[in-house]
Length: 162
Image 1 (cartoon, rainbow, N blue to C red):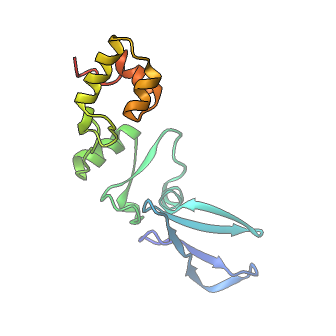
Image 2: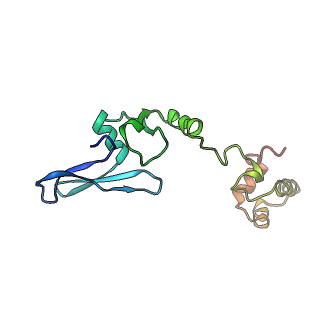
Image 3: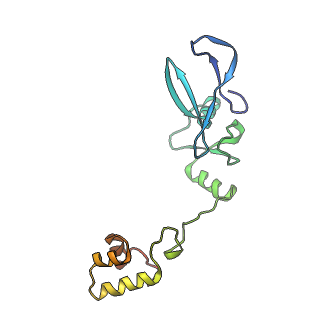
């Protein structure tokens, strides 16, 4: 292991010691984390590279603890860029230090990105249901599932529209 977080192999495919250590190729996942594949006795094991670096330098990570990339770059696995923390500390770091923003949390009604209905539609659903129209026919008219209609009329959904 280097101070830059690079993992080296000491033996070749035949198990013989190499003249000089060779870096192990790391693969970057879609989420930005690096993976390292190591083999022993023809059995390949895959490790998250940052965890491998931490555990080589500092020992096992306690259950429930997480590793945080201080600069937010998930492929930067230098030991000085890694710190042990709780899930809560990791999330606080993500939003307060690195500046991530929450996109849909706190948005309600038609402002929410997953909303299929407008406020006017919800008012119509509640009015038509009060007049006795069945939830199944309301669901067909408004193009949503019957459970969505049920949540609306019982005010489990769209509570802010009262």
